[in-house]
Length: 224
Image 1 (tube, rainbow, N blue to C red):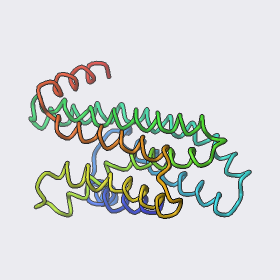
Image 2: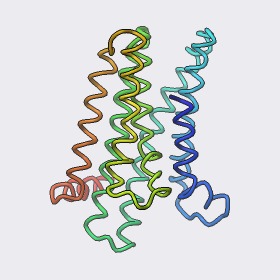
Image 3: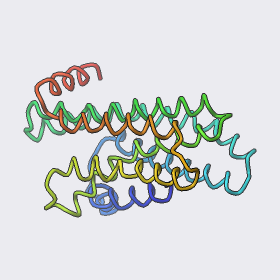
């Protein structure tokens, strides 16, 4: 899953970010670069930590885990200036009130990610729970990368459904199937939070840019 996540980031962000940065045509505040670096660092961290367990290097895994606490907190907090930038950018592009709707998904992503990591830390001595919650946290963080696959398939209708919801949350379904096949059942730590994530993101998709969504988005923007 960690390797899949790294591939998703490299492919998904290649057109809107990586290639323009390499060509020196991308312009954005420093907060965007910081958030990108932190998000990539988290997925790398998740992949390395998983590899250390496979290699039975438990001591290094535990030591690195302490650094992961600060990395998770920084990654979540870095979404706040990104959300503000997105709203201000869309306002300048003339999207009007719709611009405020875009901030909510970024902020809920940061919140869900941090909550999942927090519970994973709490259950760090119960590996069956710990690793599943960290997997879900990483999947939540990856949806923006999957959503940007729309740049490769511009003719696909409702990309927010097919790429931002179906494709990104398919990793949860795959995790469920893996658990069922490998362990004869889906662990509750993977099942119930996974259902909650899918439900929350589905609600977001169908409420997006509704009057109440714009109102909440504007309120959050003013707080930021």
